[in-house]
Each structure stands twice: as C-alpha cells, then as structure tokens.
Length: 339
Ligand code: FBP
Image 1 (cartoon, protein in one colour):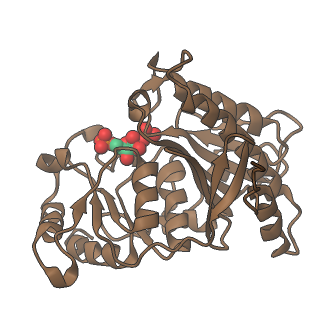
Image 2: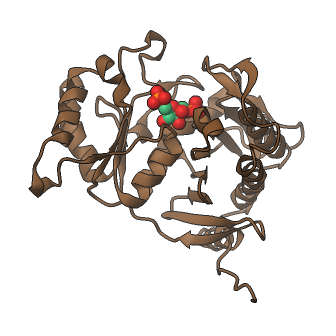
Image 3: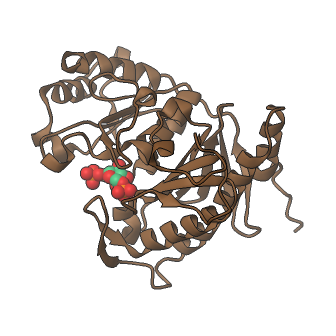
C-alpha cells in the first residue's frame, strides 16, 4: 500500500507563518526548527525508555529540590547543546539548571529561550504522558552574549511558545501569536504533520484538574470553588468530572482540546513553595500564551493575569489557574476575596 503523505509539515507551516510578517528575517523559524529536531530526539528516547538505561533517577537533586530523572538529564543536555550553537539564541534558562545558560561564543542570536526539558518527570517511569515546554522572547541584547535580565520578561512579550507532549502519540503545539496549531509526529518518517489547525479551547468545560490530595492545605476560597464544581446543577453542567494526570503538559493539553480548568493554587503544604508550585518562565507563562491564543485564560489565585507578571527570578513560582475562559472567570470570582 502506498502511504499517503499527510499534508502540511511543521516546517512548511512555520515558513507560511513567517510570510505573514514581511519584516521577519527567518531567525525565529530557524530557532523553532532546531528545537523541533531536539524534540524528535527526546521523543525517540522517551518512547523506548524501558528498553535503554533511561528509567530511574540520575542520582542528583536539581535547583527545585527535586530528584532528577535520567531522562531529565538527557532532555536537558539535548536541548541545551543544540540551541547553544544554533545561532538564534543569546541566553537560556532551564528548569534543570540554577543559573542562566550562555550560548557558544560567536553564536549569539537575538532571542532568549526558557524551557522545561521534561515536565511531569515523576511520571516517566510509569509510562504516563510527559512533555517539553518552551518560551521565546526577543533579547534586549540581541546578537550579544545575553544575561539574566534578557530572560526576566513578562509573558505578554513572548514571540513564541509551545510544548511537545510525549503521549499515545507525540504532538507539538505552538503559537507565534497567530493562533495555536497542533502537529502529530509520524515516527516512521520522523516528520510532524499539521493535525490540529487553529485550536480553540472550549469556552466552558466539564473537567477540573487539581491535586485534591493537597486539600488539607488549601485556603478557604479554593475549598469553596471546588465545592461549587462538585455541586449538582444540571443547568450549569455541574458536577464537573475530575481529571488529574500529574503532568502539567498532559493536563493542560486535555483541557485545551476538550475544555477544562487546571488549578495549582498556593497552599500551606510546603513553606518553600508558599508562592505556588509551578514555575513562571517555563511552565505558566508559555502555557498562558497558548491558552489566550486559543481563547482561554490564565490567572493567579489573586486574580493577576499570568501574562502581565514581570519575573524577578529565573525559577520564580506562581499560583496557576488556567483553562476555559468562562471557568477561569468564575474561579476568579471565588478568589476575588484574596486580591
Ligand atoms: P516538573 O515535573 O517539571 O518538575 O513539573 C512539576 C509537575 O510535575 C507538573 O508537571 C505537575 O502539574 C505538578 O508538578 C504535579 O504536582 P503534584 O505531584 O504536587 O500534584
């Protein structure tokens, strides 16, 4: 049987989007293409992690105080090496590295890159979906060696953001400000094809995603909101169904496609994470850009827009409420007393 090709590849899509911007130089397209090569390499290893020596811990703890998985190290090294010499980036930051990551001398480009090499890594060994998240800004010091200040920019300044989810299939979802588009990897030819053009997040949802195991540490507003979602009211489609995978990328992706609200508010469980669990630069901010481009919304648990927050630290944590617009609006009304 002759295999039909599936149509638009991601490289073609990136070039078509570039044509929408006559001022574009191709650098952003180049950056995205390099990142996609790294993602394909990670996908290949993730898909057969059980066969190689990639399961289990790497025997070290990262800046977040988390036990680092072997695949975390592989993914981090892969992205770092490729992007440090691609010529499009002047400085990077990774969830796995305490300090800003310089690029190869002479290879400084005009963009910054913040990334979570493997999100949801606690799910690697149990074959649950995990992902890579990335965020791109224009560097103030474009073309020169970058510095931390170049990375500490609010989400609204992003020029591109996306994630690669390594699940039942490997998908890339990205935005450059012209809507959100999803591509599925055909591993037999190693190509991402457009499978989900112009994704729109349903306005109202039927799923809520939260780690209810943390409920003893929740603030009263959070209890009241979750009770509201569980109350029986046919007219407003309640009670909602609970869905929680424990990988932010996977929980976000489901909600992006099927509608839903994900919440990781501040709680009193761990004083070291009093500001929230998830990180602004390479988790909350890029997903907020995607959510907004798909018609959704992303706020903190005191009503601040995630995209407006000016970071003060590379690994700053934030409370995150993200998902279908009407649901985030309603959640905001429950948390209003905190602002
Ligand atoms: P990393 O795996 O990249 O550290 O991400 C943190 C994370 O695993 C998210 O993917 C997920 O949403 C959250 O933590 C799960 O936290 P918890 O186990 O407290 O529910």
